[in-house]
Amino acid sequence: MLKFEFKNPTRIVFGEGQIAALRSLILPGRRVFILYGGGSIKRNGVYDQVVHALAGYTLTEFGGIEVNPHYETILRAAEAARTSDADLILAVGGGSVIDAAKFLASAVTATDRDPWDNFAAGNYPREILPIGCILTLPATGSESNAVSVISSTVRNLKIPFANEAARPTFAIMDPSTMASLDKRQLGNGVVDAFTHVVEQYLTVPGNTPVQYGFSEVLLRTLIEWGPKLLDDNSPEARENVMWAANQALNGLIGAGVSQDWSTHMIGHAITALYGLDHARTLSLVMPSLLRFKASTKQMMLARYGRNVWGVTAADDKTAAEEAIDLTEDFFHRMGLPVKTADIAPIEISTDDVVAQLQRAGHVQLGEMADITPTQVREILAHTA
Ligand code: NZQ
Ligand code: ZN
Image (cartoon, rainbow, N blue to C red; front, side, top):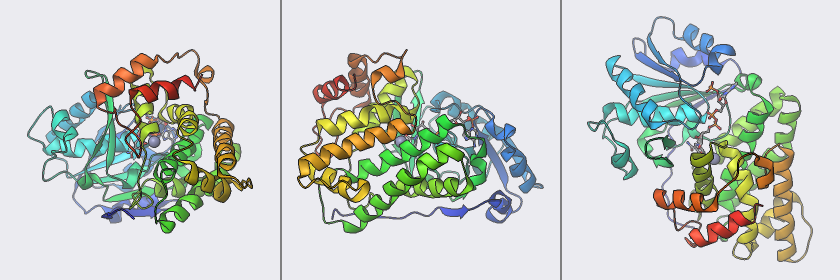
């Protein structure tokens, strides 16, 4: 097992009707800065619940956080939060809004008014504003992790930022908020969470049976409940997927194991170039990447095939191949693309993706740091 530290301070408040608990989570008299996205919360009643729960508090709101949130918009939000003398940032939405809130909480107290480079180098202000969130789309795990993935239109980059101090103080997870999600977002969420587990699990074997066992439970849960969620968006499916997606990226299964975030980094480059939804870049890249890396990942792939998919092949090579085929089929059943033809009219230029990765400094990816631009070209060639 690798050395690790694990601390997840986010208080999770889970279940239907829990938005009403806001009053018990935020001290009376606090000035709350509500951050939201393109307006889904105003259409589905979540906004009304928040405002009702916070009657008597001083509220300022900032809407318009984009999908794949823009740095430039977050800087405007930071200015508004400073002007309103906010005590707490309350993110209401999916991963994009929560990521924006986490970055914003540091930008508000930073002396640097253009803090991209400082934050990218890990230099955050000592004090940042506390963050609370109300999750409306299970997918990213952002509600209780340290990461923000931010895009800069000026720099033409989409990169992750990690700040332990930005883990939300609380996360309200009310599965009934998922009622207004369409099949595209539901499918995206399940596949995003699935790949988060895979990238912390399908590497090289270690002495980590607890982490592997927990990962396998999460994968089996998403395989069982993901299609049901797509089928009827039932309360049972919502709560199981919401909880699994949170656990997939709250730090627990990744503690002490080697990790391979190459699918995500290639995916971020594709989103930055073409605007393709985050999860759809992952479903496109992951099967090709796993096939390309099948020999180095063979032991874990075979274990995954047997323990998660019930593959019975006796030899590891066949079990690994069957596991990848089943993964690809699952992404497809969830309504996501697995070949470049599925994302038409978008056409991916390998040269542009490689240049994008180089600009982001992502040139040695994978658990062995051996996924170089040359290998990325081969992986992308196999998505055709
Ligand atoms: O903007 P609004 O109007 O809120 O609409 C959103 C958006 O259009 C809508 N939506 C959210 N909840 C809804 C709803 N529509 C109806 N009913 C609801 N209850 O869904 C659309 C997508 O929302 P978004 O927040 O962009 O989706 P997601 O949660 O998938 O977040 C994606 C972002 O998270 C980053 C991604 O790169 C991407 O930028 N990630 C963050 C991670 C992290 N912080 O750890 C890890 C992930 O791997 C990922 O990279
Ligand atoms: Zn993701």
